[in-house]
Image (cartoon, one colour):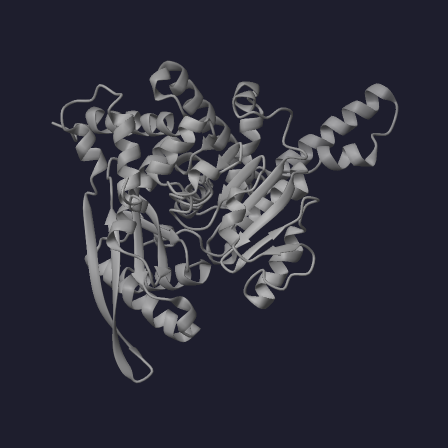
Length: 471
């Protein structure tokens, strides 16, 4: 190709490759691929004594399930094309992990680093007001969440705006997800995308045929991993893989360079340095590489691009030495690079499945808000009492006291975070195996990404055909 594909072109090419292998009613693939509607909003905000006009978008990709779901990002480089691509990915990943949402995405063209908290609040509230009045934001139709440049703070502001317009909506808290746990959010949402990546990689290592196909052997412990981007997603997946699975994080790539240490980097220490200094430069516990992008091409077992889209391209794909690529970001690999890596036999665990942890736990939060009760509240004391009964029975049968360590386990009831992690783990396992089953049924797919897209298309097309949306 003369140039790298745009993000939307890459998503569409990956979709079309999968759709071309399927027997769909004429025109249905085109209908699924295209965005249903895109709202472009221009809104004024008074900033520092002057009126500044901001541009924002809300793309509704597919309404085969309602509400639609997708984050809102604040970025100076965002475009309508990017928002449409992200909305499409949301539709596909929700279908793959059986979360009953359609796909959507939103964005505001703004650099949050250039504004104070008070100014960002004004921008967010003004954008939210337009979404409520013009783009049908509601718990039953379209539910945003956090994305790049936004977080629980912004979700709280959006919720407050919605409640101003709809003070009688008893389900108002469900209009956004990603809220603080103390503000109708759910425990485990902040870590969810990184945790989901961990569960996806664990499931990969439960399949010896995939491990062998990737040219690896054994389990996750000791595997050499490079992570690009130590933001929320990259930090959590690196931390969990290092602390819980015994993996070695040998490289961390950031905007201002990269750190490399074959003995393994201390993720917490690097994260603290980034928070204090704004980047990895000057960190004293590892080798600093000024050209951070070159570290993507270093030898490792697993490469986790968890930053921006389009980081692995036709230009650097031939030099990628990782045996497995676990896609933490949305669209980190262009369609052209994907073809090169596929020919080279690199095993890719695709974004359309791998980073679905965030929307999965957002679904749990949405359910919690609609049910008006936290997970585990009804069962907690019952489970503790049942554990005490088991201990009593064991002591009566054996005539020996149950050791305290076992007693603690048996009498410990699952809390909200335990249940969220359990549900996420189950979701990621089941989805991985569904993709594997699709690949077994349709070997022409050849790779996990194509099989994942085929699975998504099957589920979305079934929804249209069964519900009569498609005439």
